[in-house]
Length: 247
Length: 110
Image (cartoon, rainbow over all chains, first blue to last red; front, side, top):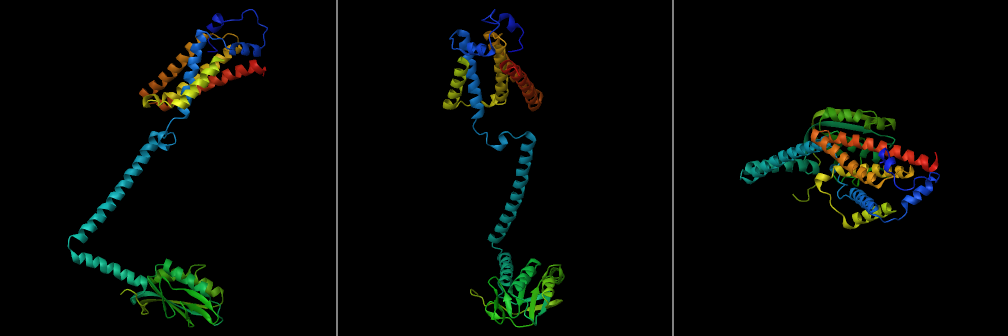
């Protein structure tokens, strides 16, 4: 140890030749002189090298929680516990549903299936839909409305929660498409009659608000120079259906 | 010279043999390394000041490692293990820097 004062008293070789340069001191001390104390020192350095290597190549140091603090670990544990509880609740709900369905209470099973069937029918457009909704009339004498506007309109109506949509005489379902033809807009291959009428079943107020927001359908249609008229209705009918392929 | 050989042998053994540190020893490993490096720097400085003594170096090396490990152990028992480790490392690092500065002054006169 450098600051061990008694080191000076017992300092080893070389007294009396104080004029040597530091470099020669270093060289002399680093020279290979096998002796017992040197072997002890060598052994200590072996230990040091071993320690360093072991510390550097310690297995599993890449696991992040190996070095994480206790508070972090507690936090992680809490998160996992909360997640487990949520999943447990979900499991309980689903196994309850499963046992309900399996336990021969066919009425429940039937009701559940009917509910799903009805929802799917509305989605696929194989059944007429009645209910409150929004009626939109687009007057477009100059033909400035193109397919992109209608596509945006359908998208906005769906985002606003429309369950069923009819454009012109076509029920909008999953494979409905809009295109620009030489005589105007084409919907799934059929030419679209003017003025364009869009019927949407859903919450009338929500749909109306969605249409009239800045940059919404009303905005973009009027900016192009066409007429936009929307009216909410408590009883709207979308009677057009898509022929079902599997009924 | 023997020091460098020893260091290389130690590293080689560590890489080839891959010793597994027992889990109870793991918290003391970094502290022991820093303490040993402190002793090495101290010894190097003593060499440069021409008052190096093998016995003192060996004793200081071992006692450094043991005392540092004991302090961390004590800190663990008192519930302040992390802080104690930090404190010991800071003190040892300061000593290493001081020794390095002394060595530098002797070697380069700067």
